Length: 269
Image (cartoon, rainbow, N blue to C red; front, side, top):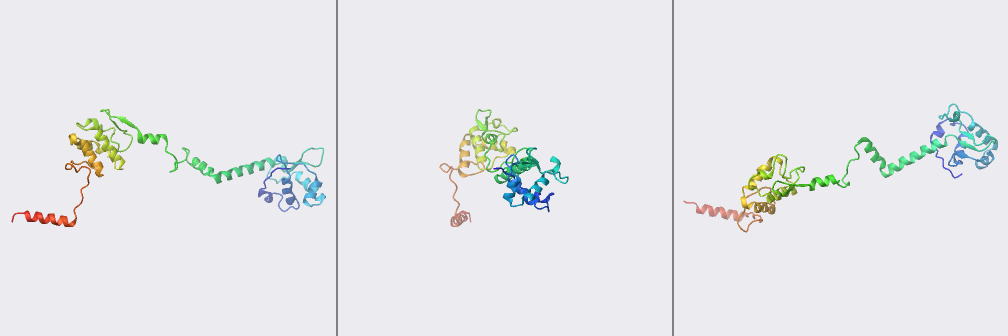
């Protein structure tokens, strides 16, 4: 008797509606069933449990075993119960027990998926068959990591960032080795610095930038370090000795006024 039979709202909206004591006894019969849907008890037992007269119980059980042409179910001609054994008049099997038990199982499963978020994931996958969208909490894939770290050698043998990364100093249209006198390590340093500060050199400007660096000749490395140290986005002639990497201090108003007065005083009358 340790079974479980769920009750659905359709119990009160079917052909039992308005029929007493049938509509009151039927949920009790359902509660007495085991997991197979069998109610192996006598009418006397049911009458004792429910407080109904024995004759009322016997009449109800007979109606439950009878055909019901208005029933939603076509099983057993709409009968709710069938006898377990034909040689006795007690002990029954609930015809649609398995159907409603499975319905309850699916409802419970769907509810659990809603509560733990699995149903939302399933609906996203249904809308987009390519799979769930990445979120900020998703770890980067190996492909994402490789896109940032992939490197290749240029013609001079020095490593330079791959052309597949935007603003990386190498594109299908430009080869740094094609620029005469360009110091390749300094160029790679300059391109990486611009990429790191979020100001990558755009592909159309790569060759011009490389030629501008090459014009500094033997000072290319120092010129790049000067710009890096000062946070500059361009390449400039080296400052006076001892001033590399030191930002120029702006003049105060008093210093600017004194300098202008001195220049005026030195002009010929």
